[in-house]
Image (cartoon, rainbow, N blue to C red):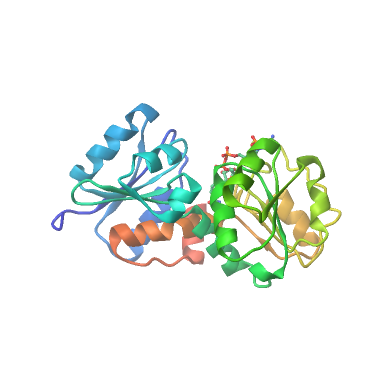
Length: 277
Ligand code: NAP
């Protein structure tokens, strides 16, 4: 593989919307690395074949996105502890022998973004309220628990899905009803929206924010728009807010480093490039 130009990809279905090619392309150009990162639309039935073929074509790794995250983890030869705990992968590294190593960097990206942007927040400061129990929530809960947070109140429209996460991740997760989630805000120091609500084209998030206090850091993993209505209202309340774009940028860094051998920087230049500014 040493004489080959390293290739990496994002595998999804659909995949045209992915910002990952712009993101990795920016880093490749910035560091003058002879490599390429391309989007590949892979139907679910073809994922296993694709993973078998990519290493021999010169691919050193790939990101995987919807709907392949769980299947890629299950197909991998080896997985990190966090990918196993989350039950899904977003970053694959290929060995020269075709072995597929799976990692999940979503939680890492979330936490790196939160700690970089939320100056007043730390895990010991108090309970968190997390909204949503989908794929992204699993990675975020895993990372928040790993940071030492001792109480996470979890609300999801479909309560049974939140309960499954609590069963998987242990007693620090307290499931609360979606309809009264706002009640859990009075002493919360962190509010995280992991649902799709508030995203362009999706319904609004109608959480009662009357108990929100300025000591609560508020972050939304939706980043289209960059400032969601949740973040706008929280900012008006005096809360520190952190937008979701940084999560996307930070989750990409471990893959880039593994594939192209350089620790990339997450900075304003990268944000502008990914926003198309
Ligand atoms: P997912 O697995 O499909 O989960 C979607 C979540 O949103 C579930 O909790 C679902 O509740 C909730 N939801 C959807 N529509 C709802 C509605 N009308 N009312 C109440 N709840 C609703 O998706 P995901 O992968 O977790 O992604 C969630 C969002 O995060 C997406 O907008 C995605 O673009 C964004 N995201 C951002 C990043 C980043 O890097 N910033 C990374 C990953 C994802 P139910 O369980 O009741 O259906």
